[in-house]
Image (cartoon, rainbow, N blue to C red):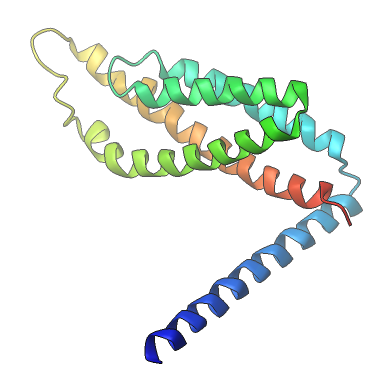
Length: 169
């Protein structure tokens, strides 16, 4: 009987957290609607966020180390452009799930590699690379990845608002 009580308590806690999160999103949607922000405006912001992600992924792809995160972000962003242009609900749902996964991956990537890149412990500095190419790691790898992470977090929040705004009443 004891583990069953813990399971019920965890389920109640999870439902409470989801309910509170939904209430916060609902208030945010009402505030947006009260200020005259429509679905069309949100689509413009989403398109702007996608283009920013593409530019940052291309910028980050200039790096000669740790570049795979930027290539995957570019692929996801281009998929998002296609999904947004076609306005297919299935493609948009897949993009939302992949964007959430990429945002979590970005967070983990930043937590794992920021210290080594910033501190110069990447193993890149040797006889083949000069100081300029070594110093450029911060500007071609770390900086665009950090900005792209912030844009993706904003995009995920925008997507949650859009889902609440467009759901049937």
